[in-house]
Image: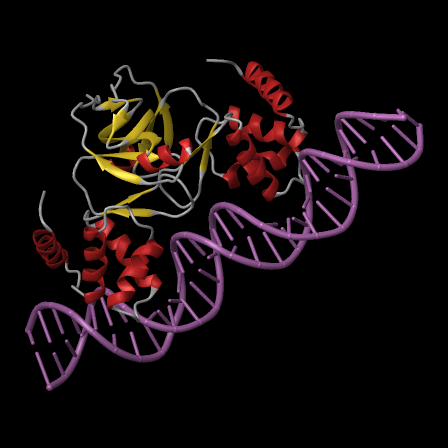
Length: 144
Length: 144
DNA sequence: ATAGAAATGATAAATATTATTGAAAAGTTT
DNA sequence: AAACTTTTCAATAATATTTATCATTTCTAT
């Protein structure tokens, strides 16, 4: 697992390779995502970025996230609710989802699935596991 | 695997149990979903229902799907794009997703994951696997 | 058949996302 | 450093998706 600093360097490197400019807004969006471990929505990322750049536009956040996804630095995830969420953890990992409150946590699974290269005509190349359940907070609330 | 008729009977039974009215619209929405194997969006379901009930309202379709999900007859799935999709297959199964065109197919996996009852404080109770790849059509198109 | 509860349809409102456009910033060449 | 080109930005408008409201209709149990 790389630290934030290394990830930011990788970001700079990738941008230069592809010919994208390294703007403060792009850095800010990526940094917010690196520091968050709860798969924020675009709106949440926007609110966070605004603390540093009050004049940033929501549309810029959308565009930046799209760009970051295109160059493979973030992933768009979509589990429930009506808004897209983003994740800066692009390494192989899975998700733990609370069915009550929607909290999403990353999880590493020891077990691996052996997925055939071909399935129903599909050429496969990756998989992800979503585990559903109740987070500790929601468990306590339910008892009350 | 139950057939459509059995599933509809189950629907009627469940509604009566819970005290939900069995309206033609509800039956139609559920039937459309039972007959479709492509995880349609709300809009697509709406268009299909309209063929039988031209005056049905989109809001009714939304509401009905919410109700059907609440009583456990359909599942809302969300993989890509900005709109929710629904699935009437509530038995344990997984999904095969084409990263190019977005096609989603159900798949049964022989392999099972042994998910611990407790993970990072979560009380787990189910999981689903998404396998990403390229469907046969998109493979052919790519070669051309 | 009727009363009461619940569901529907039409529409408005809210939320989420994308496209457009002109201006500003950064990069290049000289 | 100035002129020119290219890229990005913010603001707005436009579109798409979902939910709420409310008068009217339909369903169900009696």
